[in-house]
Image (tube, rainbow, N blue to C red; front, side):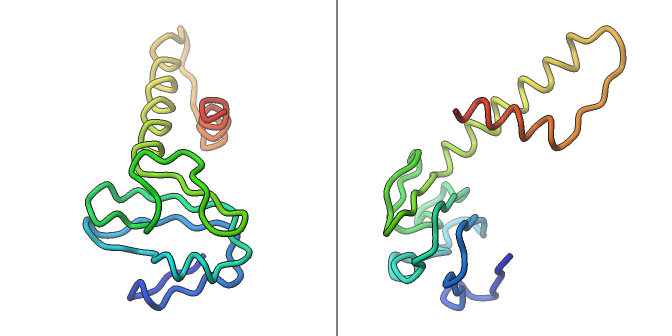
Amino acid sequence: MVTAEFAEDIDLARAEAAFCAGRAGVRILSAAQLAAATRLLVVADVNAVPPLGLEGVAIDSNGAPLTGKAIGIGALTVGNIKYKTEARLFKTLLDTKKPISLEFLDAYQLATEIAG
């Protein structure tokens, strides 16, 4: 995982995936940083307040082409999958007659199914 105090200090040279989460209204990654990230495959942004955290990706992007092989996923798409996953897990708990426990892998498997 790469973290930096300032967004301009982020180096994505070896990254295949990036997740942009920061203070509302802060651009995390610029188009220039993305263009320099030649190994990047996917970038997700959870900042829905302009300016968005990821330059070049709309709030509702779902696999928007970026540079090279990279695709971008916007905040509303991330939120929609998160909401649907939480709701279905909660329904599973409510519909069960005996106590069950759900783990991270249960959520991951369901979110993967929902995302397609």
